[in-house]
Length: 200
Image 1: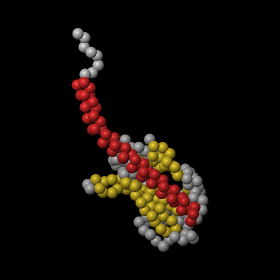
Image 2 (image 1 turned 30 degrees about the vertical axis):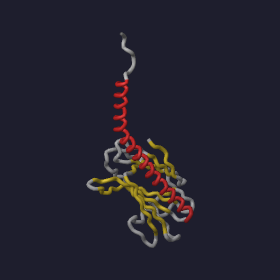
Image 3 (image 1 turned 180 degrees about the vertical axis):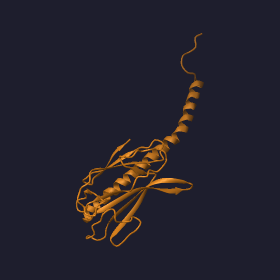
Image 4 (image 1 turned 90 degrees about the horizontal axis):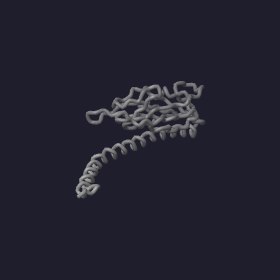
């Protein structure tokens, strides 16, 4: 007598049980990865919002507003975690011609005010640098972005006398601790407009 083609009830039950076990093991990892990417995207948006706030403040107050960003580390237990730190500072007096090289982000004076923030598990590199996923925080030098009072244009933050508009600026934001880091490209146009270009 010929055997019926197909699966028996027992075979189907075993197959479903195996699929259920594999799914149960993989789901937490997928969820964790998804939550990590969502959290990182939220941090990247926070950086863009900070730059937009600085530009808006420069336009409304007609005073130069500077944002300084740098990579740093914090100790979490026995490990170090990469963080992106940022300081937005602006003059307290209208007659103070602020350049990004003057203020110390750790101090406030009568001439300018400082607002600091940091973004956990996030770092940035410049287009000339390589994004690596080795868990090491990049050694990018501090980057200064100065928005000209009144217009919000992106200017040369290294000069006390503002004389030249900067070219479009690009920053690559990513998490150094990620196995396969997603990279967000933050673009700051000469007009001061900020956009998140890509997520790869």
